Length: 480
Image 1 (spheres, rainbow, N blue to C red):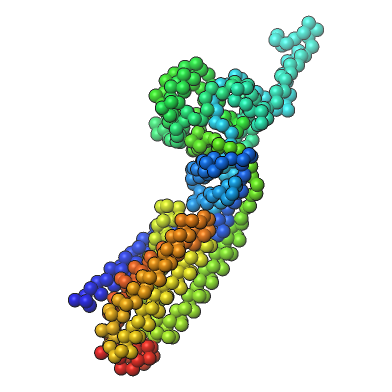
Image 2 (cartoon, helix red, strand yellow):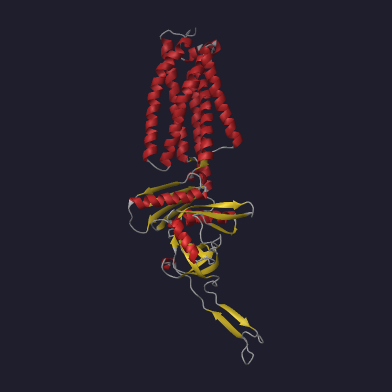
């Protein structure tokens, strides 16, 4: 009966490991590499004035929402004293990310008083040739009309209650238009959320707003007073959009339509969702980390792990003979399950693998090997008392597993404490160490124990001249 249970346990765990690994490889699931492995950008932001911890937490929450909407995998956003540390691994458009993260001005809805104001520092002139009825003098001379050059309102003078001249920029940051805008009618507080959507019938992108219960009647009042007129959506001294009001009531769900590309619609929705930080943040330090440096670190880490693993396995085989082969098979099962879990979490939950996380995995190999050593040494004690390997497996494992539980339990407590109390790379180390330790407990019970029990039925496994377990444990004639 025990033999059947052991065989069934082996079949199940091996099938689970192989099927999960196959699924992971077919789906090409893998974790997102961290900042130190794939490169990216690291920002240190400081408030322009002294603020309390509540304002910092609110700022971190808004920045996190903005970064998540950018699609950056597993960003690390933390506070350190009065500073906010933002680490963005693998971000492609670093300048765009910096602009979106650092936007601090209040989101405002301003009425457009005049559009198409000529670019600043360009004297706009109109020349009428001789004979033109609109500008010909009595002498028939040509006249020139000069439109005054109106300067753009500086950012620090963009006051909500004042009339301002503000620009609209394209995706590259180039100015494409300027507007004269009246005092702000509403702020971003009326917006609960916003999203970009695609109109299948029209084949165009648009932005759907969802207003707060308090903001909905305020928005309708603004619409009623400005129907047929443009309202500019302004953030950080820049006009993000200037749609025309075409209704007086929106039931809390106005839409912004136009010739948007997908990117433009998503960027506008992002601005509307997370418009303003509660305090102006200044960049104290910007560090761009090369992907080449990350690849070198990854290669060095993988090489170090492989060398260490090979040395450990050779030692286990040399010292424990055939039982060392069990270690190889057990680590293979553990690695298959670990990579499958990491790959799935990386694909579906944005799990990041940093250099510290890789270190946690490498350290866990030592934890796992310790479990085998504890079991094998208990097995040796049973054999020295005169028992056979067959009769010693269950008894030896029962005693060993209590020790393994205590040892792994200590590692789990340390990993949980580190994960809960720390931030950044240390947290990644704690997560991977904890996950690997849990797998060690699982594999030890459902694979190592039944595998040794099944192999103990073979005299080749126990009595072979060079690999026999009895010889490896320095116990002659212990097989039954």
